[in-house]
Length: 238
Image (tube, rainbow, N blue to C red; front, side, top):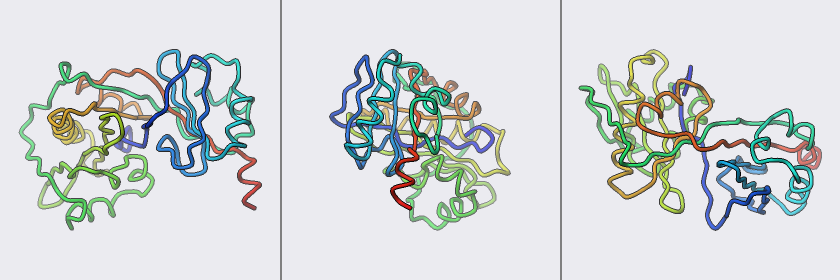
């Protein structure tokens, strides 16, 4: 979100467990990071990482051995311990206790739309592709809770179902409509839907504006997530 007002991304795990020392699981289809990358999640004093193959898992496990959890999403530390070609993040991870939900009380009319709805598709296509990818708005498993102005969608939010009852929130606002609370309004509808379905709302964000939206809705920041691409993988593909 932030200057782009986009929130989302992919953070989830299935049978994975967090451990005091970093644990690296081989998971080619991990939702923690883009394909071929290594994903790292830190919650409190525990950490979990996923790697695309056994060789990368060993490299990451050896390179990060002995480090405290908090340093595992530090770009300087990662670059000094591993042959890092690129880093995404770190991004904060926030979660919402339903009892602490602060729903938006504005007058905005919010309409659930299918991802195939022509108005929603035009909204996505008119937005910077990088912002769309960062938000994860095109990967929802719920309807898009949308706000229209003059017949056009100017903001939308929803979530993607992840294992263990997690609802990973995404929100996006058109560039010309930012700064008016529309992301919070749309996201509030998505969060209410997740709570009604008995799911745990999760919010991933890098820009401060996105983090402020989450906090306004009642989310608490409990950890961080980062993705790294190793130079060795780049060389292997050349």
